[in-house]
Length: 178
Image (spheres, helix red, strand yellow):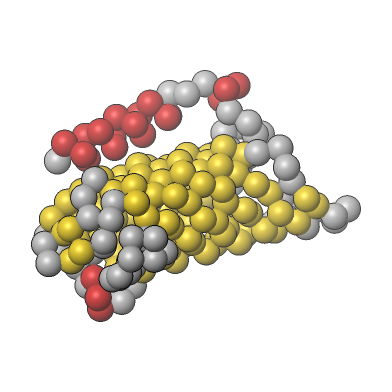
């Protein structure tokens, strides 16, 4: 419950951030989801996130191309009935055209867990990596909906086992003024 209160306070703080401090195209939001396979059938994740739009875009004359963001997340992971903190930081890339409402979102992040054991489930280390691929649908200038498939694992750096965790996550994105 305490982690949920911290997450809500972070969300409130982000919502009060003056838009002049944020680069156009940056966004923040909330997302949550569930395990994608039977290994972690009861796993749930809820997080707040912020994505800062970086100045390195690569686009053709028609507007199609790649945008770059740095994404920070903080949230709660529940697995095998036990709760822990999960946070991540890393680059993400948006592929699409600003004139169309749908973009592909891919990225990779370094993650940290507050614990590596959740009941009988051992993720073999608190240091993890998260890769994701998904879609973002911009409803209007200020609001978007997102889906991502996310894989978390220790990438073998902590030896064996390397169980990993696959998740389906749904989110709501709020965009700073453009």
